[in-house]
Length: 93
Image (tube, rainbow, N blue to C red; front, side):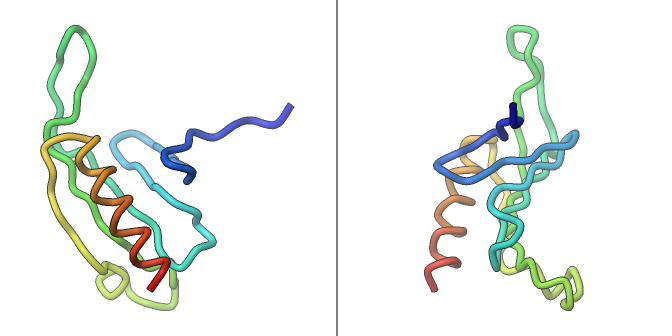
C-alpha cells in the first residue's frame, strides 16, 4: 500500500522538525514555512510565530534570489493561509 502524504487544499505538505514545505516540488514555486516560536497549550505545542516564504524552485538561482515573498504570522494556520494565496497567484501568473 502506498504511503499517503499530508495534504492541505489539494497540495502536499512535508515537515521535518520546524521546517514545512507546501506545494509540489516539481512546480515553479513552493511555500517554505519555519516555526520560529511555539508554546504549550493543553500539552500540545502550538506555533506562535511562523515565517512564510514563497520560493522559486529554480536551483540555478542563489537562495537569496529564489525568495520571492516573505512574511511572519502568529499562527501556522495564518501562515498556511497566506502561503496558499501566494502560491496560487504565483503558479497562475
